[in-house]
Image (cartoon, rainbow, N blue to C red; front, side):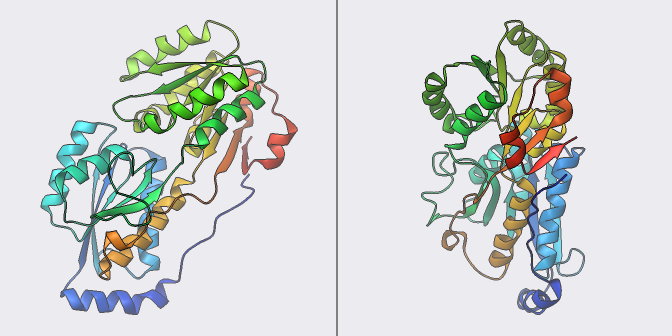
Length: 329
């Protein structure tokens, strides 16, 4: 059940005259490219793409009438994302949407002139995408998904939901995950909580089973699945294994909790994609990315998977139930 719903958007009817005027000024339909980081078969990312097109429609941009959208799917492969970035830049679109760190990096390396809007980057300044948040000073701007402090909250919530935990592993793919922003925070927080951190760095699905089985072989362990296009793609496999080994898990995204993660705490990526449409709209009307400040999350949502809790024998504290945005039963 959803306990709090985000409601946003403007009526397409009111926005249409402005979009029509922009179309008349250019003499035809505008072109927007989208480089998705995940696989086309992923229903969660399909939903996010739908929210992006919905956001554009709310501003008066309708595909087939005054807009063309070209979508490519990176399939959690950084090399593929680079090739697709070159392909999309070659189409000379009016704006491009980047959907995670690897796609943003591929696009940034490919063009310095086409406006780029991102949805879901963790640390665009440290990663070199923008010079600062308030004045991006380049061809890229957008909406961040997390800040560094949330990493400490992941550990705190995991300890609260599983008080006996004294070992926490962090799972991520070092070639695709923005892990550098989160590790120092967790390394500082762990000693205060009385837990020992370890890392499960993994790059292919075949190694997931063995890595998790080895970690779960020692009692009182728990797992933080880091935000990463790789873990997103393989989330079903990861949580089937963690449930089988009765391993408590903390995740960054709702789609992870739906797939079987014990709890997620993070941004609503569906909302981020709809918000990204507002910046694409402003760019199509003539504004520059450098004049659009990077926006950070204003709230995070907590999702608890009660089915998983029962399967692994974890009792959810009443305090977490009271504050959760959604409980999957």
